[in-house]
Length: 471
Image (tube, rainbow, N blue to C red; front, side, top):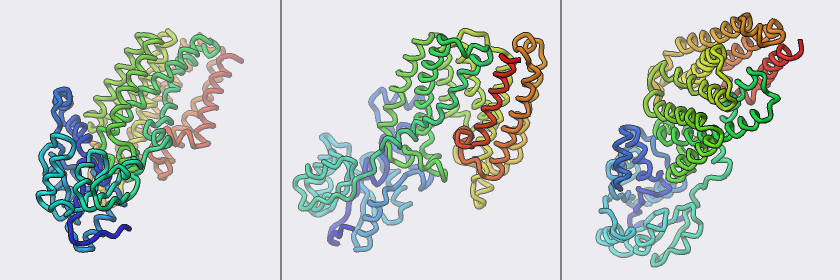
């Protein structure tokens, strides 16, 4: 740990330092959750959002190396001050949470860089009368007037550019997101859901049609890109709630590994790229994807907090993939497949909620889950609804296999009755894993890693293949 002298204060940039997240960039998304139209209007008009303090201490991640430096300064008897421009309420809240901050300095908006901030600090402490911790090139004028320039940045070339300070200290290189972090943030494993696009192809027995398969592969890529963009947008909207969650706070954006500004750029770029590919496939397919995006946005802003409605919405988003697949290959969507999908995915939606509720610590059993309309006391109801929806899908499948449509369409539909207990096993296995605490946070990810699930799904489709073509 770097030793600093004890006769001058340590001033920490609050607005964009690696100690905290960039409070200004996050202000837009906090405002967007409260009022999307007002937030967008202010952004287009060039008016900054007023940063609001997060509801809890966990709503703002703190870089440990810098926090250690602050604690060391306090141990040496030095004052530690946060410096902010327009983020006073949030800075005072952070100072109260940390318990090791002596005060907050509010400076006027700078005319050129951080020149006004430098002048304010020189007026208060004298030239070279303070140590300053910052993170970007905007802090160069302030560092030039400081006794010690403390640099905490992702840019390793920044410290050598500091001039004027008696001493320059690279506190640490702020963590920089790598490829693995972006893969986690984009949730590429969730692309497995887009295999539902191929369900109408299999149901129509057109798996050997190379043209249909080719267009579905392009559609799969387009849907994946757009879905990943919506996941990033959802995480930006849910920043504060995610930081209060035991697992979700490790997501790259919530943890501060990926800056909000970079994540915000990915959203429109991904939407543009995905919709461009979708238009190449079909304008109607692109329209389905626009509907998917609109429903996802409404879900992220409002419906995810609506009890029961949120699960129905999630099931609808799954089913939209099946509808999109039918649009791509030009087949009419079977009402049987549509209803089967709705109930099966409704069960998976409740399964996701069940795993979230069951992971709540015992000490918080009477509290509502952050960002959700459920509490742990709803576990029994969610369990009943989820299993009921699952077995409703089994009933629909059984009725279909004995319907006139199946008798005309498949060579031997009675052979496919074997698929019913296979699907019943998989559904029961998934819920049993959840009740035993083995599910993890995501049913889709669990299925991709669970051997029993992979075998059951493979057998399910194998039975349909045999019944359709062999007997």
